[in-house]
Image (cartoon, rainbow, N blue to C red; front, side, top):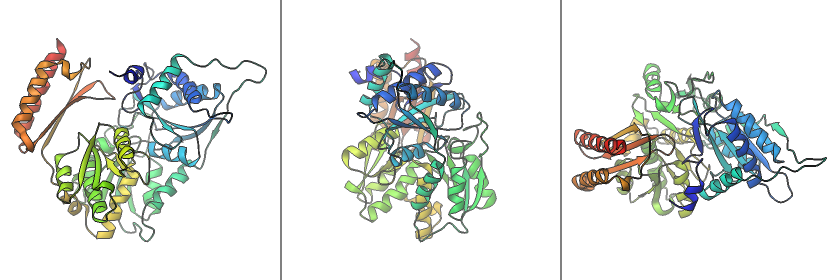
Amino acid sequence: MSKTDEARRLFGTDGIRGVANQYPMTAEIALALGRAVAERFRRGGRRCRVVIGKDTRLSGYMIESALEAGIVSAGADVMLVGPLPTPAIAFITSSMRADAGVVISASHNPYQDNGIKIFASDGFKLPDDVEADIERRMADPEPLTPGPEPKIGKAIRIDDAEGRYVQFLKHSFPKARTLDGVRVVVDCANGAAYTVAPQVFGELGADLTVLSAEPNGRNINDGCGALHPEKVAAEVRRTRAAIGVALDGDADRVILTDERGEIVDGDQIMAILGTRLLARGALPGNTVVATAMSNLGLERALDARNGKLLRASVGDRYVVEAMREKGFIFGGEQSGHIVFLEEATTGDGLLAALQILSVMAQEERPLSELATIMTRYPQVLINFPVARKTPLQELTAVETVIHRVENALGQDGRVLVRYSGTESKARVMIEGTDEATIRAYAEEIVATMQKALAQ
């Protein structure tokens, strides 16, 4: 474990996350975090400004208030934008020249959870070393300035933030085209996009059906959205729509369904858009950046067209870091985080859906036909709870089984065993040519790992 990893005890692969009102997602931690963020991003003598946005979870009010108090107590100003998608907060932070942006969201998790993600002034998520520095500042904060004129910030509400983001999304769609007459079903997951998504598709002219756009603080991701695309798929079949768009709670990822109600996931979206970029010569290095979770079929689809797939660590922040480091512009995750680095700084579900609709309109082909660009390899993924996350290299029996399975699969399969960065779970993923075989392998690895972790 590196010194940076040791210093990052609160931050995981996507910010801080946990059950609301339990450590670390408490008002006390949020207060200390707000102060530390203000200290970290203070620039010389000018006042620091921090954007705060959130999704629709009930606990968002508590965490928002505590963060706001911490930031203003350190002499910085807060700009509140209310419920907005995570990519919208990144966009607003950069657009308004703020010093930092904070998103209060646990993304696809149930409403009982919440999380805090931080963006720098350029709209990008923070690297590990900056998160480690913020944690150090939380443990050892600067003393508050006493005196007759204490340095206390103020908070204002930005009323036009939603409109700014809607305009940004609309401008990403070809100006010469509209969605007039195109039937679209959008599932907002009772989350942060519940007002933005209908505006975008409606103003572009779509014949729109909206699902799960009545948040009550407790129903975010509940049987709807990207985690449950079967809901939007059923509505697509019922209404004979051209596409279904299922967002997650903070709308930074999307799962689509074609006109037949068949699922089109992040890998297929990357295959469709990545091959178009390749054909136009608009893909630097002929490379798409994905993660170890992406299907082997995506790699094969790109390879057949002289493209390449670079695999980064799991988590859209690591995809973005690899893209920026190597000069690539397009990538994402199987789960539906799709990143267009020339347009945005993080995954954006609505932006991805609009780009797919643009290809459908330009080529006059249904989504089901576009999705055939990629042949999916059978993939089995088993998630299971763990009480502790013992490094795999210390679980000798597990390592032995993994190596045996990898040798048996050869070049026609892959094995990935990892712990979740946001939940107390382990994940075993295997790809191969025969689903029954790889499922048996996956179950063997899970059983071996559960036994090893119980000792």
